Image 1 (cartoon, rainbow, N blue to C red):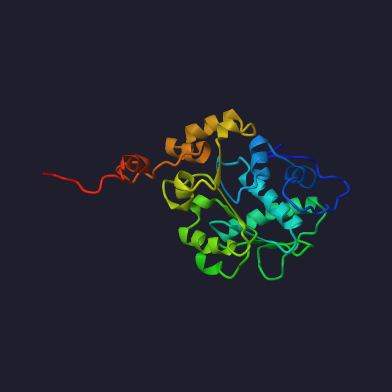
Image 2 (image 1 turned 180 degrees about the vertical axis):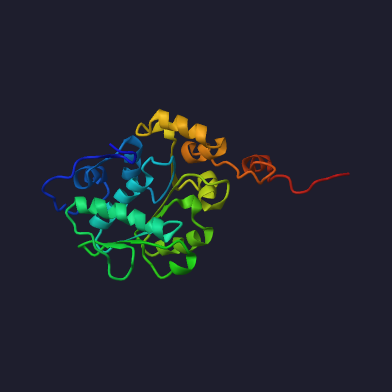
Length: 264
């Protein structure tokens, strides 16, 4: 067992999985083909058929591992599909692909690039998982994405998010955001606090994750400021200390029915 999820030992004889046509077997796929045994919340995310999902979860809960499993299942079961992975930096996208490649090797598939993109993974059925750099100017050009995953989304610039969303249009693709909070600003905060009902919202605090020891959290609480601990481990969107009033208080006080203030 590790901090990202439970993994079974790699089998001595690697298997080549048989593609399926839908997402109904994704939990079985994760267990038998990837050796990943999800906990209850991770299973909820894996089995979700939501087109839009947002994970506001503690550090080390396993956001990236769950997202990688969803990406692999999508790529493996839908030939010629394109899965895009965005992160704040190119290095972080590469780290996500590294984790994904390790899971793919568990299936007996040789991990190799697509020949066009530096951070990429090509499947035998023509599907690709492509990691993107963290700037808006360098991600344009992709289209008909089957799925877009945005890792550490609270730290991804808004203009990058705006550039990615149109890539889902032609393929009617899925969009998943994963992160811990980073203040009361940006598209991750806006989506979590005020996004439409189409979004599946999942929140898991560190105290709700059995893989994170209580003694570790006690040490972190003592070593960090209260605001930092609440954001990193308790899924709270705290202010950065520069505002006079908390943004949620301001929004709660706003009354759309008042159009003019009479001071006479």
